[in-house]
Amino acid sequence: MKFFNLLKERAAEGVKIKLSVDRFGGNDMSRTLVNDLKKNGVEFTFSRKASMQHFFYSINYRNHRKFVVVDGQEAYLGGFNIGEEYLGNHKKLGYWRDYHLRIKGEGVFEIEQQFLKDWEEDTGQHLSPQHVHTSDSNRANYQLLFSTGEELEQKVIKLINCARTKLTIATPYFIPSERLMDALISAKEKGVSIDILLPDNTGAWFTKPPSYPKTEKLLSKGIQIFLYEKGFFHGKVMIIDHTVANISTANWDPRSFYLNDEASCIIYDREIIAHVEREINEDKANSRRLTKRVIDEIPKWERSLQKTPEWIYYYF
Image (spheres, rainbow, N blue to C red):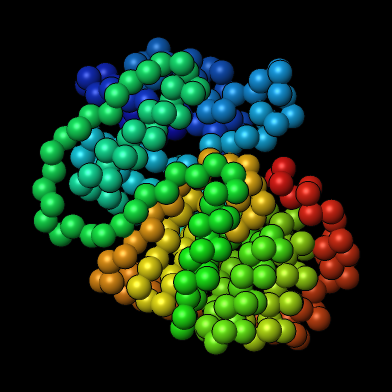
């Protein structure tokens, strides 16, 4: 409630506030709470509302982007959601590790433009972004990618194919398609060193069993897999040859690659990439290596769930 109270306070001071919440992720937001926000000047919408004409598709079409835009001058993008668990207050998961970007300059205009496109899709209200002139000092070279559906998978495969020496992938959920598996194995066979960082403990346990055959296969090909133990790893990061990095809202799962609206920032600035790599190395130091012995110790009941048809995981 502290966050909502702050929004109401700033709205009362004259700040124009638009809050768009994924209906599935915000399913604990009561009608009373929503009405209270609106009554106190906060413009509110649930994103990607269900359509009776295409009901099954629409309830699974979700906006997974995480944007904050402030005065057209500063924006935030990355893995963090807004909730108690993301502050490390989850009783089971504890410490929460994530990666998020603060962006200034021209990229803020692009992010606000995309937010308002999403806002118009959900509310029918057409608005134009603010274009506030900002300094180009400390300018980094990066590209914003707003994706829906297979275009994200195609972009990730292109990035994998560009790797020549080193590829690092970090994600909380890892259920790659056969095309992504083929790209990873092909890169490894060409001599690319590949590290994959995953949480040892996840908030969605049912996503782990379908990943077991995939991680086991990659392990057999010589790809290193690290299991983060300090808490829950929720970052979505990819680094290619120390020269390109992707910090994203997208997981490595069918929902992010084929259904969700996602946002990614592809960075070409070596100083920023070096900083991200130092953070990833720290995360790997707080991890244990996945080995054949670890796989053999997985309980039989849990291993049996790996045969669940993969299409089911598009809808969780």
